[in-house]
Length: 295
Image 1: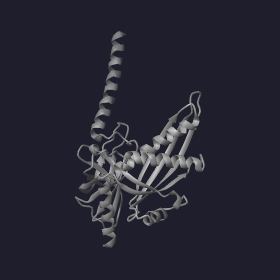
Image 2 (image 1 turned 180 degrees about the vertical axis):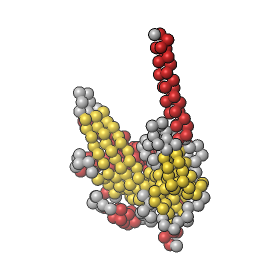
Image 3 (image 1 turned 90 degrees about the vertical axis):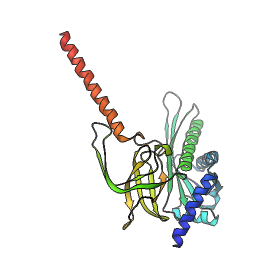
Image 4 (image 1 turned 180 degrees about the horizontal axis):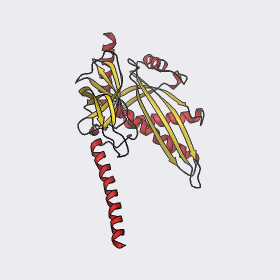
């Protein structure tokens, strides 16, 4: 009961904080998994991310980089946030740095991932992942452009997902989604739920959600279809013995930089592809007929 109340308190704090543009967060720093640079590069990424978080005006970030040595696991960064009496901890990682040097200016790609963890319920993790690009005659400036772009996209994603709250509209059932291309097969999902968040909420195909029942995390899933008025979620992890019902709370924990498919009803997309395919065949047949007449 105490755990449930604690999580409900954290959820209320997050929602209230988003409404007032103040989500208190302990920022513990950046790790570099790309092998590109050292302390100076990690500090550059950290400063860019702090600036981006300030720009989106959703997070009140407390710089706690001096309190921890990275990399660190979730328990360690949550402990730091608890010591500062903050409801969440944030860390970031540079996943990849790619530098191409064609005959023109250097082309840089930086992949950045950030993890936001509520201290009272660390298993409910909010994640953001973004790729930024830079193109400049000076390699250093190209790196800075790519880092800044990735940092801003990460900050934007986090500011969006912490404010998205919905509910289950229809309980679990199987679903068959038609292929979006005539060469593909229809996709069968044995457990799906329909939720209230839709394309007008900014939700994208490929987003990840968590389902809460009376303040407890009971299921996770991935958005496979986004429509007007609702979206379809394929469940990937359900707590044993749980019955998901209409009205259960839905929280978005991840939203991709780009949707895996166009955020349109899949049936309409399939119809478009079919018309495109039939039109191509019609042109081919017409061309063959014209050729026969010419002969």
